[in-house]
Image 1 (spheres, rainbow, N blue to C red):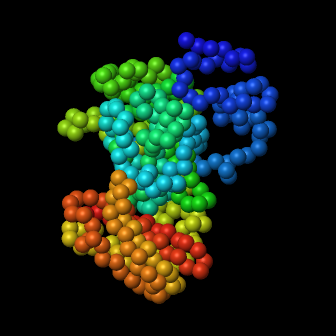
Image 2 (cartoon, helix red, strand yellow):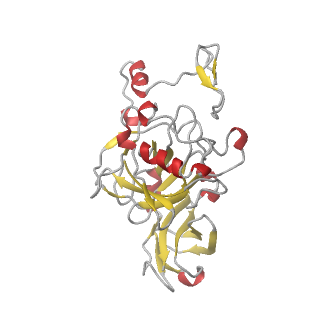
Image 3 (cartoon, helix red, strand yellow):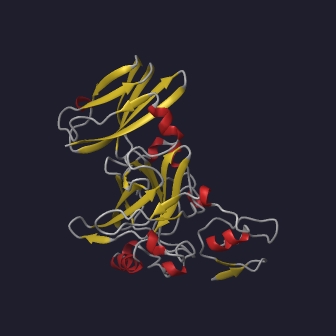
Length: 355
C-alpha cells in the first residue's frame, strides 16, 4: 500500500525509513539527483569538497579511476565513538546468508595500497532495518570498522543485506584517512547474483528478492558499474565471497592529512619482525621526543587481548616484545600505541599476524 502526503509525495506504508524530515517550503524534503543539485547551485564548483573514491578494479590491479562520493545515507553512526565497533564479524544475531567481504584501499597519488587506514562499513539487515534507528535504537548489528594491512586490505564477515523501498541491496562505507579527509560512498553487487542468493536461501529472506534494479536506484542510476563489487559462491565454506577496491586521495604508503603529519613528528611505529610470527615478535618504536607510552592490542573482533603502560620513555629507539603476551593460535591483531607529550595525544596503529 502507498500513501500520498499533503505535499504530493508518495511514501510506501511498508517503508522502514525514518519519517521524512520537514522543510520550511513544501513541508517535506525532496531528494534531488546529484546532477540536478549541482545545476541548482548556478555552476558553483564543489570539486575541492567532494572526496573521490574508485570503483572495483579489473582483474590484474588497480585502474586508479576516481568516481564521485555518495551520501552517507539516512542511517550513519559515528563508529569510532566506541572501540566495540573495531571488529571483523559484524553480524551479531542477524540472520541471513553469510558473506565474506574483502575491501582494498588504493592511494590515487601513486596507485599503491594504503596500509593503516580505517574502513567503516554499515548496512541494513535482511528485513531492511538499520541498527541505531527507529525501533532499533541501542542496537549495533551490521556496523564495524577495520584497519587495512600492509596490502591495503581488510575483511568483514556479515550477511547479504536485504532491501527497503526505493533502494537496491547495497553497502555503505567510509575510508577515514585523517582528521581532515575521509571518503564516503556505497557499493552494490551484481543484481542477478543478489536475487539468486535470496532465492537460494528463501527461508532466510521472508521479504523475498529485491524488486528494484540498480538502474532504478537514485544512488546508482548515474553509473553503478563504478560501484560494483564482485559476488561468488564458495560452496566449500558455505558463504559468498565479495571483493571491492576503492581509491582515495593520497599516497599509497602513508596516507594524507594533518593527523598523520603530527604523529610522524612525535613517533614512528615500525613493522614487527618476524611477521607473521609463531612464538615471539619485536615491534620497533622510535620517539622523536620524550613521551608517556601506552600499548593496547586488539583481535579482529575488537576484543582487547593485552595492554601495557610503558610509562615515560626518553626520545630514541625502543622495542616491544609482543609474542609471549598474546593468545596462541593463528590470528591477526591491531597494535595501538598512544604517545602523550606536552603537545597532546598521538596514536599509531600497526597490524600484525600470528601463525
